[in-house]
Length: 217
Length: 241
Image 1: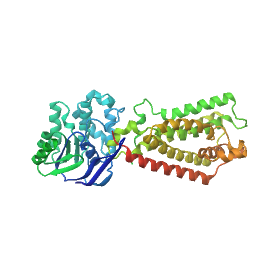
Image 2: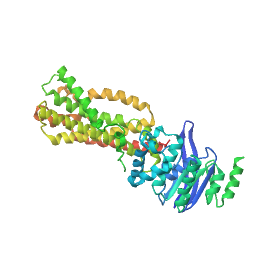
Image 3: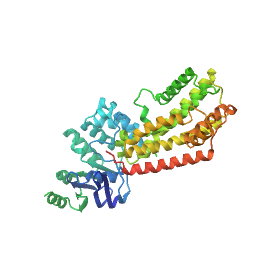
Image 4: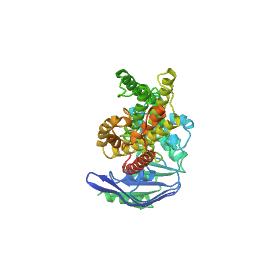
């Protein structure tokens, strides 16, 4: 399980300290699917990066009791001048899994074909997202962190992702951050709303949805 | 942790460049000095003098230069929690050290075989001096690398500093040739001790080396501590894209 206790994050900016997250508490059990709603700039991506461990909190405690993926987002996570395949090898090595075994799956799933042997910096955003998704599926995590990524790609790829993530890996935990309430409503067991750095948790997605609507005005 | 980030060479045709580059430098300088008969007023064999001097310069200078602004191109990799700022610096430093070491070994062996250089007098002493210089390079690399993360100005200042330090670092002279008053001052520069040690290993009784092991240990540990502390500080402030 993942446990966040009183997590704070502040950034140094040109205009001094700016608190982005303010005393966030959250617990995610194995297999739970949690959605986090928030408007642009509410701190969603920061929160998910803290959970993944890519960034360290300014204060507070964070316990990670299962293997957690890196934040699957539009960009990032790849070394641009390496090819897709080299990135695959590198990432597999970093997470201690077998790159050779993952290669066929990634090749098949990402549908990048020819481009898998080209540098990642020549990829389009959609291609990057496909590679990122394929890679994270190739490494077996207990919990996937998703930063609005599934929204990319055509509908067929969409369906494939859905099948992999909710079908074959239906038992895994999932944390999705999004500003799209409909999406979260569809996939998550419960939801939380992030407003101005404060996280409001709800056991019921509809309640969260109502709160989110209210906070928008 | 996972310093196996040995990928810097893969996308280039050959990882041979790792040691080919420092080798070319050393060869160029050796050639130039030989042509100019720039023995700097001494009777020491010029080839060995140049190889030992310039190789050591490359060791600390490249470590630092490669670490400067090293985070930026690798920033996206920090998305993975197993990749730390430290790993980026460590991988670059290790690569530079191995490159410089291979270059030194290769040149020494070739020149000795061809007869341009007498075999070194005391290999253990050379190795010691080299390790000292390598550790110094690691510390310097960490320091410069972390500082460039704070401000890009450091990189520009470092360029100038490295340029000025080169003639002062002991690569082009032996401390013994200097007047006594200058010796005192020059021996404050940490690199000088390493070069002196390496040279003393090469030439044996031909030279009268000036180095102070206590000061060397002190310098290495100081710069390493500073470097580690700065890297730690840098990893707190770096944000993955």
